[in-house]
Length: 249
Image (cartoon, rainbow, N blue to C red; front, side, top):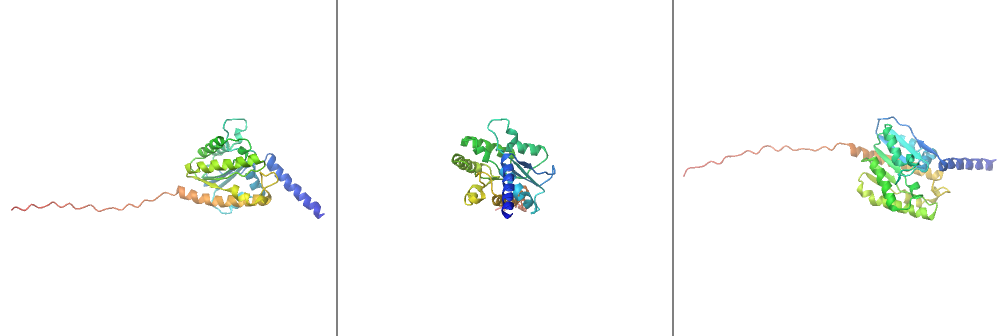
């Protein structure tokens, strides 16, 4: 009986993981035109982090952000070098759609790139799509998680290349901070699922806690960015002018 229950649990976890892989998506609700608002923009890994580990609940517990929008979609890419039928699922398209729907994002966690490295091979393309999304989001605090995909040796190498491009252009965007998820998970292979793309339940728990930490840091950055700078002005008293007296010889 115990073995049957264990098998059922494994099947349940496997079925849920399959949903993540085959086409799951989520976009948590928000109150339009209110804030401050945090957006977590990602792919199926972001979906899984919310589904398995309740990342939104962790961030809500800190009582900082009024809106916490988690938008994750299977196979979502950062952007597209040329428009095609899947453009509506891109990070760029989704950010614009949410903005048009009344979400004024004050900070964004970007967790995209895994599906770009599976298809695109050139660093020039990586740079194009990264810049496209950063420009679309604009001058608000952004944290971008590095890519970790290892399902084939070629894709693993392209993950490294994508991350290098991201780090190289980051100094051009003072509002951008890079979070090195690639190095963190490389030290913990048990966090990766069998497909070498998604995560195990333990990996999703770690990812959710990471989202919570990044949300706290972004809130501090948001407060600093929106707090007016006060300038102290010292009033200097006028200098008294003395007219010299001419004495006759």
